[in-house]
Image (tube, rainbow, N blue to C red):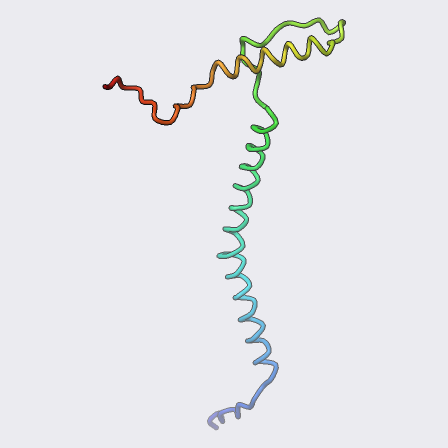
Length: 110
């Protein structure tokens, strides 16, 4: 006896499963192609802001000319602290190049 073809009917559970599967595939696409690059950009932003904050807070070492030996036993007075800060500022200013004045050129001319 030959097999009789089955009568296909509308199955709402199958449609529901297809919709859920499509939504899951879209979620994978969304996470893979949109959220991952944003996470990479977030890492770059955090590193950049940490470096910028370190520069602004003076995270670098003092110049060699301004470094002096101080006794830890003797507390700094206000005058000592001001003198040390002035020496450090002077050392920084000496390293900076002067900005050209408007209309002034380096080449000699008439």
